[in-house]
View 1 (cartoon, helix red, strand yellow):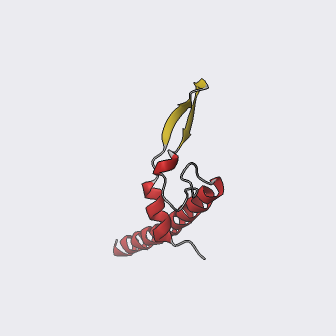
View 2 (cartoon, rainbow, N blue to C red):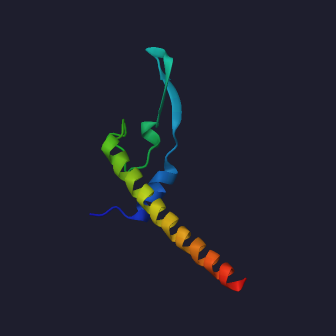
View 3 (cartoon, one colour):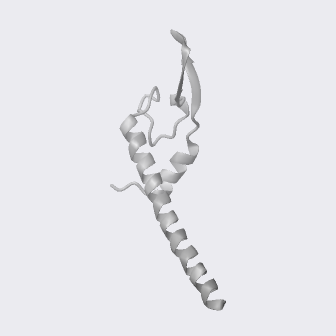
Length: 88
């Protein structure tokens, strides 16, 4: 089943990255997510973690949609530039 752009966008918007340190290794700072707070789409069933490949899939869909939007905006800018050039 395909992941819809809308579902991916909602899940992406709900992600809240955090910085944290493990108690055992207070010297290093890590980036990640609080497992209990991630969207169901990427959470493990027990809500104690998340699947890295699920995150890759989610982020890939979001980036693909952004690339489509960028391409459309580039076309629009080119058309507007051409219209301005013709009006001169």
